[in-house]
View (cartoon, rainbow, N blue to C red):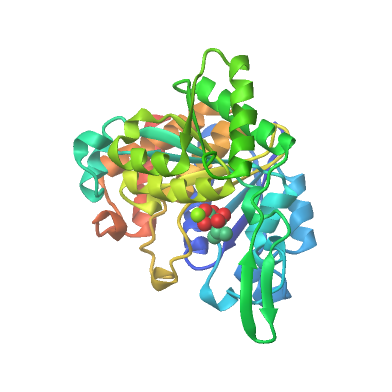
Length: 363
Ligand code: IPM
Ligand code: MG
């Protein structure tokens, strides 16, 4: 059987401890299925800066391009905050460089409500029933990357800060196609968000996306203003299936959607290229590095473990393994143990132990 090569970038804060759990899960899957994983490990962002004086080395990029998937724990921390003040986004952040280098424009950010975790959510239970949506965020363009951008100064006096919200045709088209195709595999409902009422780039986005809808007659398509989408996510989240968003709105709406699941620690993400079966995607939990709890073995490993599920589903087309992982997570939400972010007293490794047992039983 062909080896499956995975680049593992544990990152900063709680990144390494949740990654450790992902590796335990991979080992178990390998035991059960005989899949031959080859793990390459490297440093990214803060760890890379401290060791090499750069947030992401060229060697890391080369390796990332050559493997079948890239797994990331979490990156960031105040101490690495403003080390390259005049740098490009890629120079300021190792993960952003990697996303750009791999051209993983399609950011899949699922949010789902688990019946046993509804107590943890700030929402009323009846709003959450059946919530299962994906925010599909554009990851490689838009206002976070386009130029010009900068801060104008007059001597020490700050004058003006600016970014450019811009997308070209191809960037919007490929993202929209991805969205229609994703919706087609799910509940066939695509909601595209923009601010076409006030922004030219929004008018452009809406025109381009709407123009493709006729190619997907089986998908129920609608446009929605981004601010209204935020409101709708709060009052009636189950109306959504796939939300197609640009980089900035997707960043914001995916955090908002995360609140539906009860804890940021539950959420996984995949950043995918045009053809995820041919070139590597990046799979990472949505949560940050949580420096306040780093090293305490109480971080929730589920976001990381569900990122593996996304890797098997989208990267390797191994639906069965992905489903078993979801099942194992579902089970642990019912039986415990759970980490403190979910109101439990379990440790990171105990939650994983339970997931490993469930995998053993259910395969
Ligand atoms: C995310 C994060 C990152 C982003 C930050 C940390 C650069 O907020 O993945 O949503 O905006 O992409
Ligand atoms: Mg974000």
